[in-house]
Length: 250
Image 1 (cartoon, rainbow, N blue to C red):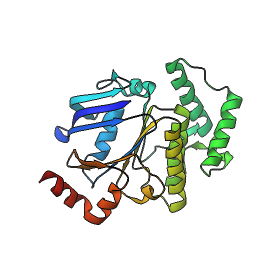
Image 2 (tube, rainbow, N blue to C red):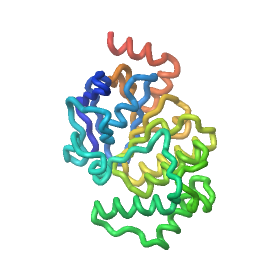
Image 3 (spheres, rainbow, N blue to C red):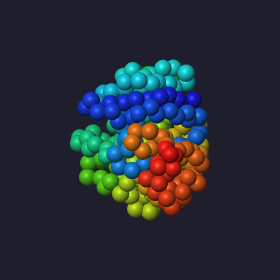
Image 4 (cartoon, rainbow, N blue to C red):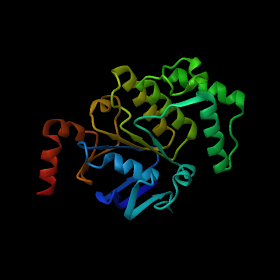
């Protein structure tokens, strides 16, 4: 189980997270929603161990192991992985080489055997097809010249190869058309069906038309002010963040 308890985080000496607590069991999908500036992306980066985000109090644990002050690479080896909202381009490094190198590195850290090159190429070809991408993508430079939707699909493919215990997915749905949104939602469900916990950060309800999370958490001003089932998204649609925040704080 993944757990954060009373997490407080500062960015540039400004208090952003004011004591956030969550528990995510294997196979569960949790969604954090909130207005701009509410602390959603800070939460994602703090969990991943981004050094710009300073944890001042609280605890981050996976499988009972305290990872609050662990390095980002150690967290990744243990199974905490972040899918970026704006994936970087890596000129000169093919999708195949990048993903295979990452796969080998994570397998070495976890002391398990990686796929051999033939197996990996076959698996990559299958996953590219699953996400609606042509097999020629494997020989192109990582994310170079790709559309926003193509980059985000590759983020999901990368997660599938790295097999996290908890996947933190930060606003991957922003700017996607309906077809890409359906594919990304399918990828998230695939991760959860494999027994992986998922924490999806989003500002929009659109992706929830194709994804039924176990829990939705509303974040306002660095705090989770309300949690509930997937039906909470409908309440947000009717009342807005401000009214829910006022109601829960009164």
